[in-house]
Length: 80
Image (cartoon, rainbow, N blue to C red; front, side):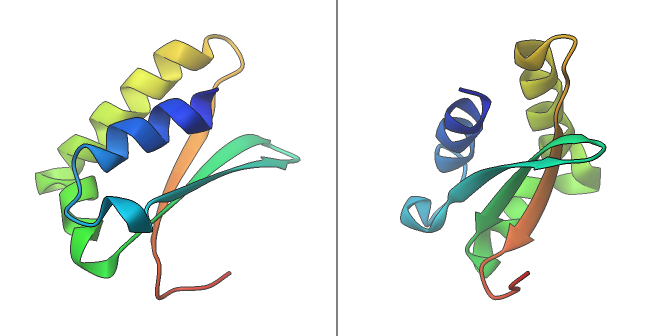
């Protein structure tokens, strides 16, 4: 549910919505939502001084409740 909500929000901001992919990864420290975007859209997703990324984290944090979730933004050229 959180991944779908974040994907919807990010697709509304970027110029290449088809390149947006959100993966929910469970790590030892908790859940991580990994957002992959087109390299040209990375600046839009992060925003000036990180304000857009902070807004995404605030909204998803409110939806997550006590469980919480970390969000990592990655461009599609970088592979893990």
